[in-house]
Length: 88
Image (cartoon, rainbow, N blue to C red; front, side):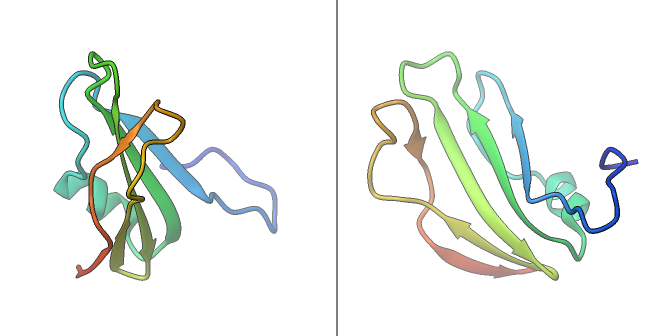
């Protein structure tokens, strides 16, 4: 089961995981896991560096929109992708 049991009317809105010391990226398995959900997913990577990477995407019904910001988040995370739309 992908998600814990949720009450009626509750939905997951964020799927976040880490790749530890390797770079932040969405694997094909990560993309398959989202299926036809509408959810924000994030991957944190390079946790062994002073400024880890954070990759965020909005998944909506098989479409992925990668999201980033041209700044560091209070000096704590480096966003690693520009905005683009990917069809699954």
